[in-house]
Image (cartoon, rainbow, N blue to C red):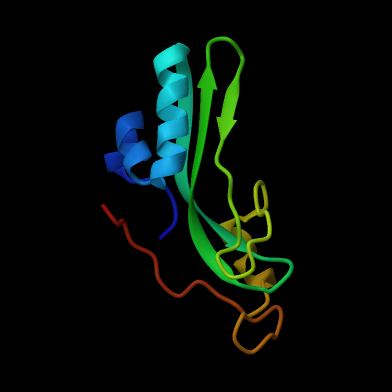
Length: 115
């Protein structure tokens, strides 16, 4: 699942998609600092270490005091830090298959609006 659904138009709904610990961190910040804007989307990641391919919830919250919260993203398989290493959909063909380990043969086979 990639992209942003209509459900995530409110920051409170975005927090529901985060793990409880991360949602609590962001809630504390929102309670203490005026919110400027935010970005939420499901992004695609491939681990450089173990080639695990996964989607993940990405949240960036910008506050009026110039402070920014960025989601922390780790590979679910090996726990390597994956923050800021998302793969754009138009680069899927460059990925390595996590099953057979061949590179350059991945493709997107289906698209739809998921909300």
